[in-house]
Length: 407
Image (cartoon, rainbow, N blue to C red; front, top):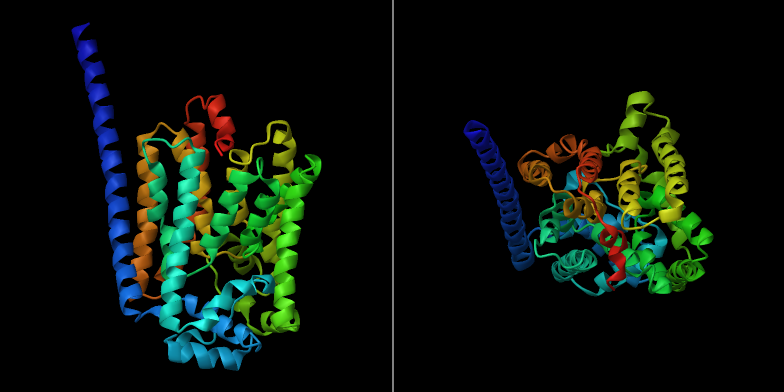
């Protein structure tokens, strides 16, 4: 009996040590990522030397064109703005590929220099991330473990901040929808305009959202979404009536179909038949079929925070094209899984996976394209981690099925 008790004590001690190691790994990764990101922001925001080398420069150049009533997709004009701002010549001319109804977000940038605009834009993106994480923390019942702080160090979010990309706007729109869809449906619909900045990332999610809204008669939510898009389109038309034809011409001439984008849909096309563009939409179509089946199976107890988490991860995975920074939209799902799992090892695995991407981010500074060669696995990895975390979760209890009632 004594030997059995001693073995049990040793096993318990071993598990406790493993938990300590896992928690230490998570803390170390998060602290390192935070320090590196803070260093980057100090260099970027205080010196402004890298303002024109980031993806942000395309939004600034587009804003400069748009605010003066010029073609925001004019290749020569954009190049004349981007090159002096610091964009390396090997990148050619960059275009804003977001739909024209998103042009209003670039309008304020047209009134500032590239350095000032970069500062304001970076602070705005950081504010979107901070507000999103705070709202998620509140929706989870304000837990003391503060796991939501991991979102500040999540590699795709860091990448989004470094590049000045708009995925964090879409993240805020997603979180606001999750927060308000029950209590303030019209404003939840308005918040979806932020998601419409990158509509290709929400295809299965948006399809189920439309079906759910019709079945539950959430017409105020649909009204809010339609009103926000119409208002944006009207504002664009008043400033540039030719925006849509100009956008269509840019998409045809920009050569986007020839770009290597590290995502599953593009890889399917490259593996099967590189010149067949419609193959990129095959995973999206299959994802929509699965999404409708998934909704039909769970429609009686459908919960957007619970079922929508898996749906969002799948939507990003099967998007016709997506960059690593777009995976920041998976933050609500990953925090959902982190709040449910009792496995410290899984939390450590998530932190270490994020650390690998962060290593690729900083390696890309010295070895261009290293980031894209090493991030093909990330979207499937976040999905697999979430499924495993939910499988290993304890009894969630009724409280976790009504997280959104804490408004």
